[in-house]
Image (cartoon, rainbow, N blue to C red):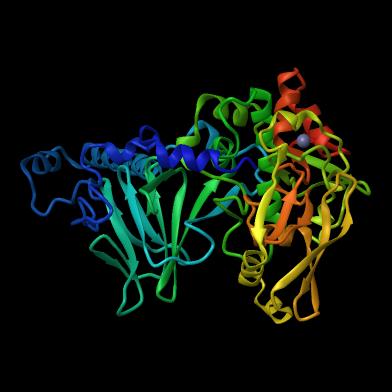
Length: 487
Ligand SMILES: [Zn+2]
């Protein structure tokens, strides 16, 4: 994926902060937790008329009409009231925008669970909701609270003394709850970063789960709405519209594969960062992203696995550097099925600034420190004296790397694991040479950015700019695969 672009865009450009935070009556800042507005009523249907407690004049006049007309009028009023309640219930569940309607193939479960604010539980979060909303217990479905107005930005934290969660000043007696706004796209979650408060607004619902004295925040969102928030997280605006379409199909396949084939027992399907796919929510929904998602609605990559059409994990990365590599060199446990077997020649990504990189110089102490921080057991071999590549792919990527320690012992890491230990932006790929000098190591002749498995994003864009359609682009980078409409 093309890292860095989206983060820089979000942090540095306040003009792109979600508009809901600037609306009258909503949050005033992260350090100003505010109570839930219009929060006095816990009546789940507060605008329904209350039953009469005394006989009014009109009621008496009706009664004087005689039994038959009286019954007809009462029956009519009851019917009207029933229909009105149905319409109110429909309104309370929120209008479904075009892209989130139930698909024609109802067997496809399209609900995606996106873990926000990182994989690990956090101490607290800051939440705002635009417009009315409801809160339910995630497990029983029991209603916990009905907010009849917007929720200003407020602190969400566990109750330190008992079970339950505080949202603003209100305690909710549940450790696992779901916030559902009436208006789709009305959930905003904020997190202080080193430089600013980062706010992101999301479609769908928000699940807040307590784990001990910490919380996890998970966006429950339809896959098509999710994709609207992925494309601009992954691609710069300058990319060709056909690149956005190819990316939409790859990202849809990836997330549906993670949902269906991911580790069992996991409470989420994907992260919102580079660990899965960059997901920036509503502020990523520009014209080209929306058009690409709609044009490819329901389309996924499949390959023929002995007569069965299957989706697969459509890995992709920024710049392959000349040739893709097999998935088995990236994740040792994964089967190198034809679409992920690598060896796709791609000189189109030569336009990328990451096509060539280096040299990068690091001292022996620095390399040792970074490796041990990720793999503490390697400390036992002492300070790392030499790095020996063991096996190269056809594209020149290092498959494994032997670490010779000062103690005389050695350890071996997968090339990708070594790279990520040093830093995925320091060593942009596993395609480099290693030289040593008096002060340490020189990583030189670097090529590419990312793991180099599957789709190459810069290569994709060069092909799209030459007029190639998105189906053909995907067929190049995932050999043996085709695009199929799932719903
Ligand atoms: Zn490439």
